[in-house]
Length: 486
Ligand SMILES: [Fe+2]
Image 1: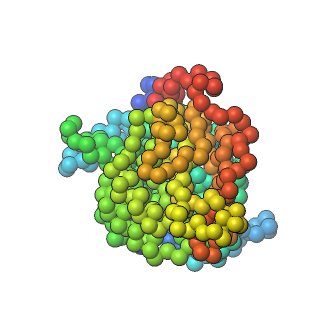
Image 2 (image 1 turned 180 degrees about the horizontal axis):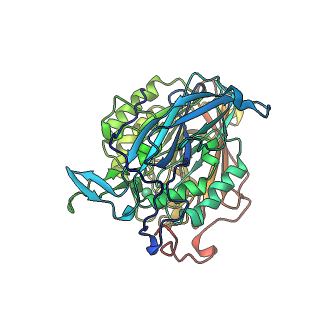
Image 3 (image 1 turned 60 degrees about the horizontal axis):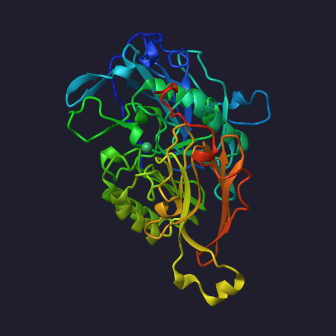
């Protein structure tokens, strides 16, 4: 993979601060949305080799034309910064209020009156594995961020990460508590996987402002691994009768992600893989972008070439839907055979605004008399999770257990009307998984152990610390139309 940042070079406007009206309820843009000469929206992401590099992206007003970042090994010394080295940023101006579509300038109504901004990024490389680094980023001269600390990936050894489903609605009002509870529960998480629909309106800057205010300093310290969902796409400036969607104007500027040169340009920076450690390899798909055949082919090849003990796929639209009246049969038909061919261990998804965990068992040929004698009766091929971290909640499929079950998948646990985050831990031949509510109560858990023959044994967790979560047994749910991002 080769890292490439798209440039949009244009004359910048000398505007210190975006102060225009925001489409949200007629209010002016709040101070935490407005860009300035100070860096904000600071987010660390994972480049090609997380053991020796990490990337950071930040925003300023457009008049900050050039920027730099500094990095030092983090030590207990009060002036660790005296050993800092400077790196020049790649800078890209973004016009939030107007977008080029089909050769014409089209207004982005949500962002009208917002001034252009500039995103800056640096990829720190040549670093030592499993080492704590401190970095800071600059806006205008002397306008520095605080020093953030980030640990590079270990070559091998135990690690944990956080996974969340759709934030999407009421991001600041209702999602902030979930992501902050996740950080509180797993502060040593090495990255946070966001499985799509981070916002509701893909190119609406106000919702990204809410997202970044919610995560606060968290993604300055813990890398983000974003997955594109259907709400990361919009149809601004496209003909009325088209079913096409275009990726958020903010996605590529604000996240520095691996670029798969072999893929079509539409899939770059939304379809990628990260080999985090010797044991863990993650693959991210973009189920909204189309070209699912091309993605399946890429994934098949990437999985064939991966010798990682644990292989996890994340994508937005679930292979097995749990929301009432929903299905993604076309995508399932193409992608599921690839997952099963390669015994993908875990598939982390969103979109259905319910919680569901199901599995496809290992076929009978691996269930030998010896295994049965050892008590290894619950052999698993692939585990699938649908989860939701935001406030939008859907009804589970009719006939819950039977409704979810299709193509050989077995439902193991489910919920409605609940915000979740999940912590996954990888330690050697063991993968443990725990789903927590936003109030940090354990709802669901399991442990998978992989034998020398790569066959996985499943041990279900001892159960929830709270009762089954269903609409009929929880507080009334009036919807999300009154929440801030609607
Ligand atoms: Fe979605």
